[in-house]
Image (cartoon, rainbow, N blue to C red):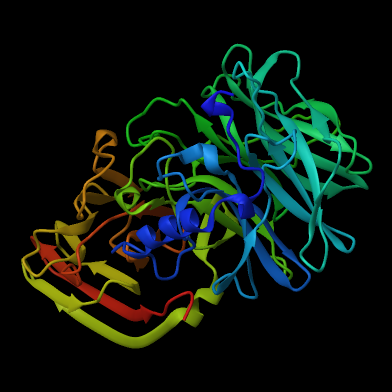
Length: 499
């Protein structure tokens, strides 16, 4: 048997000493997050099965726990399962889906979940390859009961390829409408362009192809991953992660993108979708593979992988990689999605301090923040040419993550060129995260041990990025360059997700 075909069928079949070896390596990392979801070892990527069921929130994520040991992908690839009562404090449930059938022998790939009567219905892609490496995708159904037991269907919901498309066919997002089950699935046409197709079913067991969603983007990248369709405030929204877009000015700077189309609701009969232009969801360095869900009180919440495929992160030296963003509530304003941190995150706050300062020309305001905190900052620019926020800075302001607010150019720039341990520099070290700003700006900034998430003007612009600073980087400096500015700031230290 070729080594490439060696697979562990069940997680418990992996020798305990191998698991311990992987987890011990990770425990020594100086970059372990405090309030973000990340793995105990190995590789985390796409959020999956994000849902509210049986009184709890459920989050699964793609998981390769032993990826950074000597026998990486040959060991295991599956879903890991967490649950929470508030989307803030998560409890590990353990293994969710395993590569334990002939339909997902090379890993359960991404998928979604929805409540269906008294069960949680899970729809995901089973990845398989034969001895020649040829892939056959299967769209698989599984059911989780109220005891947390997951049972896979014995037969796939949809098998194999579709005429006119390649084997890149994955990531179903499921919903129910008018007594019919639907799923939007990412796919690649034979001409190597990306698209989304709709599958439908009357019983959620046997599925058929409804067709391709008709958009104004017939040639937009070579693959659309992780599509997600939902209705919000009476409009239709299609999220997806297109691969293969070329950079255009400040747009599409990352290796891959995540964005959305908003418009009229999707016509489920002829699959036409009348929409506005494509917009990126996040202007930071590390944001991909989004998934949304509805809460029990009617909010639409988004989670994403705060990472990128094909980039090597500094945590890999400690045997792990990847985390999820903080959950964001979505709303629409002028056909644009706003993202705001969920209100439940306020439970992490402690050590509140309030500050108001008038910063004179070329003066520096210094504030000790520590390494894990939230700030709610309002800047009023009187006549300054620029405001510079140096976050997670050392005392000499040599190592720092910088947010430049530029009233002349009316933009905001995020610069991580001196943030700490460098990585991914081939994709640049700055991002334009907001444009057309006024002289009064509000920013909510969440900083964890190795990440920063910036929300500008109540979520009109968002930037999510990994950073890897040293222990001595625990200060905030605010400079008002060439003129005077006033800042009003609320600061909170944030408790750990798991006390």
